[in-house]
Length: 109
Image (cartoon, rainbow, N blue to C red; front, side):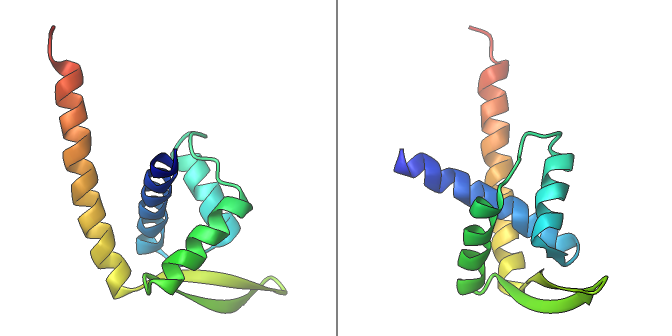
């Protein structure tokens, strides 16, 4: 079961890096965007999101900064050059995996 959790976390990290490759976002914005784009398939909780973000930050894949927004100070996340490199690698791996699964499912028995 641990490997399944690790795989899920790795795939979720890839999705978060993809969102951040498009623009800087704060936590709830990532949760909401991921939920909407996935048609409610990915419904992250804050308790799941923030440990993933902290791990990505510790690895140098993203950086955090504060910005005032409507009278509130929010933490925004930004992808780094290293994060973009990992995203490209993980996207290529995912595309190969998805194509292989599609090929197996399409084969007649």
